Length: 203
Image (cartoon, rainbow, N blue to C red; front, side, top):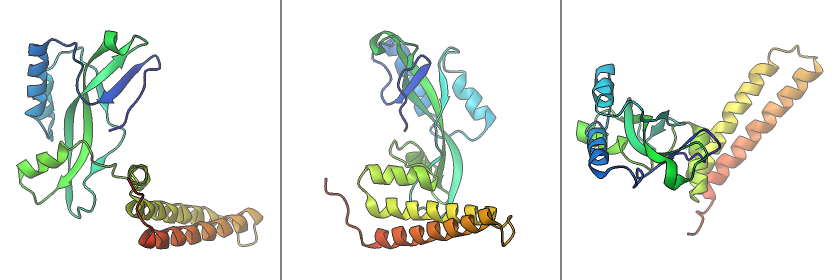
């Protein structure tokens, strides 16, 4: 999941909740969240929130997340306890448990236990092509990362082409936009071919 650093607001850092919280109360919070790996209705969310303190920070994950390569998926919400840092205080002074909600796509044909196992994974990449490309490339996974980059470029070429279509055939700006759309398309094709042959980055 994404990481934010303290800048005067509330910074959210997924991972273990802070060690300074009372152990018994913290264990109760962990148990409550663990018992609800997937939340699909208002009633289920309300039942979870009733077990957590009113002052607990609440945040949303920056991205939808999904298991790569899964063709048939359904949407769910995964609650997760995260460590939060409030204000400008040091982490040791101001960390506290927070609740983060993540929109996750899980295999539609899987049993509930299998879907929950996917939803609770902390290594799920983002669902969109651009953040997913960053996920793969940052890990040295060039082939899937470049494939996603090629798809992003194709979408951009299509978008620029649609804008160019609004100009008349002899309009200078429209002509330049059509040229750029073709260039982006060619770049997408080159990156797509590279994705088929490039080697992975050595660890």
